[in-house]
Length: 376
Ligand code: SF4
Ligand code: SF4
Ligand code: SF4
Figure 1 (spheres, protein in one colour):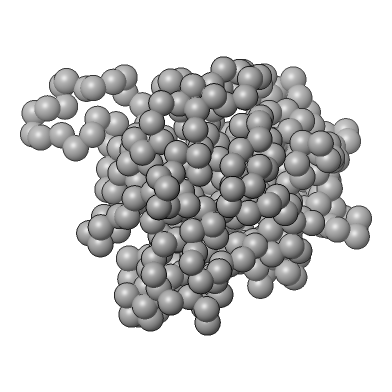
Figure 2 (tube, rainbow, N blue to C red):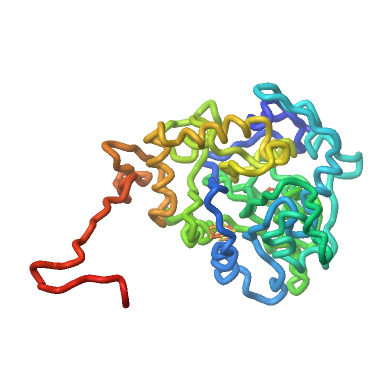
């Protein structure tokens, strides 16, 4: 195996292919404090891309309630069990093994295969903070009352396990935007990618007998637009853009600002070693140990920074730009309480006030000589 640099775990690691970073890397940031699990994102993706035969149980975008929800069932518990002991201190390299380093001699990545029925309950555990309880069991919670929603797409990983595991070399990562795609004409449906992807975001279509996955909405991205699951997000919790590695980070790039400059957004399960490119602003109310296992040792500082947002007008401006445009924001700035977004050419896409103005209209309108009330 080759040695490659993985900035998320702060060390070199083993990967079956040489390092080959794309010119641009697709990425989404999600603010988990704002997700309401409305599933609009799941349906936006489903109605656009997966409404065909064999795709009935396929959700390239899904939203699960953590800690008990999961799609497919128990994907995260099974992956972490295979990984074994994980040890990591803040500002230090990750000491444990990645899934590539923990692999047996006959596999490219430590993996497991979900059973068919595991894909059949995408809302399993929704809004459940105590696990699947029997009648009357609710009085003995296994932990404090908390849960949060985790929306997920393919992470278009820098070191994709799906790509590493494919014996047909049918999976490729595009240089122009870092999107990972399955070449449908080369795939023979062996399902090695389904087993190897630890996030379980490669899926088998039993009708066509080949594997499929989130395509990063590349036809929209190529035209300068954000993906469907991003632009349809009701909670305005998402922003898609292009992330640079930390040594090339630009502070006026929205994703770089949230991930590298402020440390507000963190990769999920970075210890798996794929450098996944979906990033999360962690929920401030959930259990810290659980969040640390999911997002790494920088959770506390991300939450501390989030709590101090009122002192950071730039980050505030960026958060109001989330969900304000369907175009991809390449640059942004904030001046005099207004956040501005720009496209790749530097032309303004949109500007948004950080605080909306409030207009109070009198109950009696002198000009019209009529009263106003809120009764329809
Ligand atoms: S549309 Fe947005 S708010 Fe609704 S579930 Fe999806 S990510 Fe959460
Ligand atoms: S999340 Fe899974 S399917 Fe997507 S690129 Fe990474 S390994 Fe491949
Ligand atoms: S990026 Fe596009 S293809 Fe991928 S989950 Fe979102 S809507 Fe679906």
